[in-house]
Length: 230
Image 1 (cartoon, helix red, strand yellow):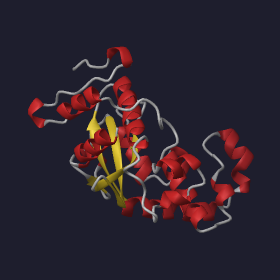
Image 2 (image 1 turned 60 degrees about the horizontal axis):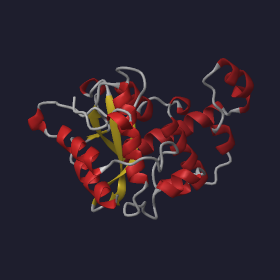
Image 3 (image 1 turned 90 degrees about the vertical axis):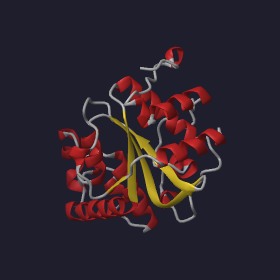
């Protein structure tokens, strides 16, 4: 597993890298994004700190805008987790208010009056500043939802199972109130420690990233269908 994780870091870290500010229209409409964080290394290169995707068709650009640009933590669990860690690190009493989800009408009716709106805007700006200054990403263009979700889970499980790519002592995630984030070294709580990439699957992924194949992509089906090239 550690060998595959090392090769995975080399492969994904070698893809074209995007950092803020970026132009969303230049990104693929569908795919998986791989996040890297300033100061975090693993296997001698930039350490993968988050893998994510989207469920709606043609929504990758929107998802990345929600993470990097839209100051609404209720639309991005990644933003919410960054805020949680910043607030915990600062021992900030605003933490409980940050937890309220104001997305729905019911949520706003129940909790909006409990939230200091001006303070929330300030924390949102702090989250944006941290993300924009410290994170970059690469993208694996993948058209089909089932393929994206299958591969996303495999990638997360592969990295979370590796003992060699651990967070630095100064990693912000060490201050997260979420045990799974602290223990995994990833800005994630789902899909950890499940089925990782096999050697065959990794070689398929590696082949799909070869420009010589002119855009041929790997289709990751359910377990009984893995191994089928599109």
